[in-house]
Amino acid sequence: TRSAFPSSLINNTENVVAVPKAVNQRLADYYSSKDFFTGGKTVRDWLGSKSFKEQKDFGRKELEKALKEHRQTTRSEDDTHEDDEGP
Image (tube, rainbow, N blue to C red; front, side, top):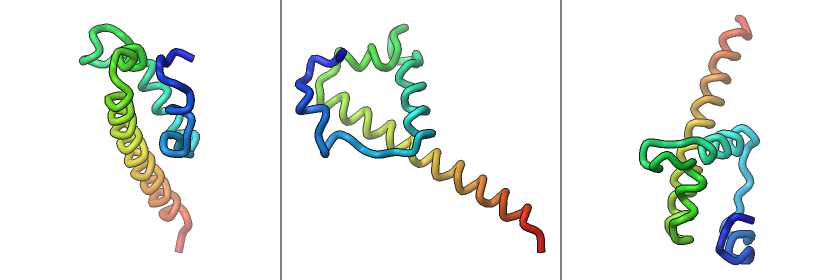
């Protein structure tokens, strides 16, 4: 593992959350990308220098954004399919 934190801190019920595959993929893609604030590093590598609390807070924020986006996308797709149902 890349983390300097004990696995007991990472792999516990307070830190592991079940999410839809699409949300997990969006987060994995984001963490592998480079954002304007990462100084040319991937988000994952940039986070590596942060404290556990900073990483957890960042991750929760990104998870909330990804879940919100997923719900909006799913809702939008449901609306589209309702239009296809006919009279």
